[in-house]
Length: 332
Image (cartoon, one colour):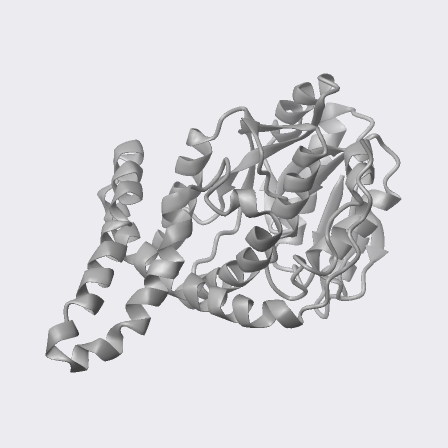
């Protein structure tokens, strides 16, 4: 088991308490826990040191580099990645393992629980994710890195996580999605198991969430320029999701036309289209949860699209100047 983390003193105890309990109960060969500390400046390392955990040190390399340190140090043929702000539920691992009995499967990922059920923002974020997870088939081309079990041979075949082009030191990158795309392209099957869950500390402050969505937009530029077949969607997101940030940018760019009477219709029209794009997801959230407070998702999605669009502009501007790493050779 590999847990990457940086400045996670507030969440790592719950993560390690649950993880050590699961591995004891499962009595599996995956019993070793490797925590990779990515140059934390808080009490993370001291907290981890109190647990029966192998503590390794990163060097502010970001989530991709940190995960690579962990799985390369692991001894087992299977590597379970769990994020440091996640709390695995008791059967999280046992729900994943059966999928790897098929030798053609290179990895299997799971879903989320919500560690902040009393926060409206956290609940909106969580309900959207769960709605998407319910739509995902068993065989997928996308897996997140927060709760995923990979074959070591699949990681070795593609060279592991990206450490430069899609890796975001200090921010959420796109290294987990990009790894899944490469493993899938290398001929391995990927599976999704919704009954494997880890509780997640979803954001409870709007500004923190919107900043993360700006990072999301930034890294998606790099991701979809490299893997162009996914630009219209994958097993997790669809064309409507990917079209919203450009539509938000069009809306912002059209604001100056409000000064010309003949063109004043453009900005309101694009705003109305962007707002309308929120309603399929919002209504689905309400239908599945029966909770009318999820109406607030329409507004959240509208604002989020703007922040993702801003991140996309930053990514487009940065793309020509970002150092490209040599791509690792993919073994069949």
